[in-house]
View: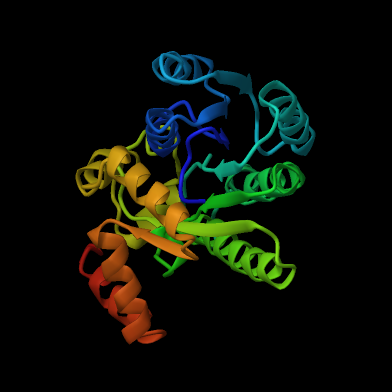
Length: 278
């Protein structure tokens, strides 16, 4: 898909962050939009900004609920006549140790980060085939490349997205489908994900003395804008890339994993121990 003009894209988590930026970038290129989010206000804001350029429809969708995603896919195809691109972007964060992560929080995260991707992919693939061309964009993370202490649940969800998308891409190629699939691995992107993140006190065991106070510290490390991420994603779709790394931090972690495929764990452990109280 070399051009988005005259196409239709469906985007989850379009009310803010990467989802909003991708929506506005596609609108600039003349691509109609079917947008979803659970945040009514954010969704309305994105739709308003994009509607000056292209036709936009919106729907409140919880991507963890399979029936809601499938219903939205059908409605989007009817309202726009077709769907060419699905961007499974909706995501949340959970910081906790592997041992103590509350199971309810773990299930909440997996429902959105992983099952939301599965639901979106399965719901929209028939629409992409019917359109005669298409692309699946699944947003993983740089934490889908390496494991990080305190991020076991988030790692699990993002590694799962990576594996699912890579397998999907191969199946599409075996079947000679006119559909691409790209796995997106952003580093620290300036979005609202930390505001909604769930942070468990079990992080104190890792030397984080004030887990709730760490939100601001983490946000200061986020150097890449959502707009830069959107630009990279659209370029990757045009090239039909299998994977796209966004930000210098994501590229650095990718190199570290390639050079030290298991050794990086010992390196991270040593660095992490510096923060433990004496």
